[in-house]
Length: 339
Ligand code: 13P
Image (tube, rainbow, N blue to C red; front, side):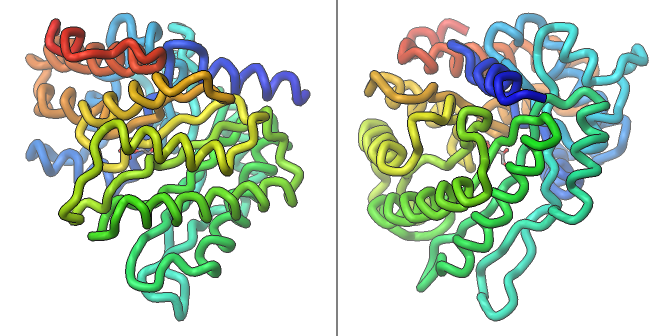
C-alpha cells in the first residue's frame, strides 16, 4: 500500500464531525465491564453487546471507525454477517487492537512495558485480510513517587514505534497510544510535565523508526489532575494545558489526535474535547477514540437484556452525537439535555 493510501485512511479516521469508538476490550476488561451490570462474560453476551453497539442506526454520522478485539473481528452478528462487514457496509472502518497488554518491567516497581511485537508482521497481514484498516497499541505510563522513569518511557516508545512501522509496512494505519494514567494524587502540572516528556520521547522513537507521520493517528490522554488530588482542574484549564502540551510535542504533519477517555465521566470527556476545539485554529484534527466515555451510559441502559436494546442504542447514539458536536466546539448543555 502506498503512503497516499495510508494518509487517506488516517484522514478519514479523523474526518470532520467524526471520531473512533474503542470497543477493543480484552477478555479481562470486558469481564470487568460486564461485572458492573452483573452479567456473565460469555461469548453470546459479548456478541449481543457489540451487536447492540454496531447496529445502532445513524452512528456513521459520528463514528468513522471502531477498534475491535481479536475475537470480535472474527465474530459474526446474529444474522451471520461478520462484524467487520456490518461496520464497513455502513461506511465505518474496522480496526484492531494488536498489543498483548502491559507487563511489569523487572527492577522498576510500578512500571510496565507493553508486549506484542513477536509475530506482529504476520498478524498484521491476517488482520488486513480480515478487513482491518487500522490498528492500535496502548502503552501505559503511571505517575507516582519517582516514576515514570526514562527506562519506562523509552522502552514503551521503542515498542510503539516498532509497532507503528510494522503496521505501515503491512498497509494498516497505526494508532499510537501512550496513555498517562489519571490514577494518583499528583497535580495537573505534574501530569502536564509527564505527558510532555512521554510525547517527546515517543515522537523521537517514531522518527528513528522511519514512521510516516502523515499516515498515523496519535491517541493520547488529556492533561488532567490526578484522580485523588484535592484540586481538580476545571474544563478550561484541562483544555489549555492539553493543547499547550500537544503543540510542544506533536508535529503538524500528524493528521489527527484522537483522545482516550481514561476514566473521565462521559460528559467531562465531551466537555474537554469541546473546549479544546474552541481553542483553534489547531494544526491537527482534535477528535475522540473513547471506550468508556462512549459506552458506559449505553452499557448501563442495556443491562444484558434484549428488551433494552432500543433504549441502549438511543443512549449510545446520543453520546456519539454529543462528541461529534464537540469536534467543532458546538457542544453545549442544551444539546446534552435535549435527549
Ligand atoms: P477509554 O476511553 O475507556 O480510556 O479507553 C480507550 C482505550 O482504547 C484504552 O486503550
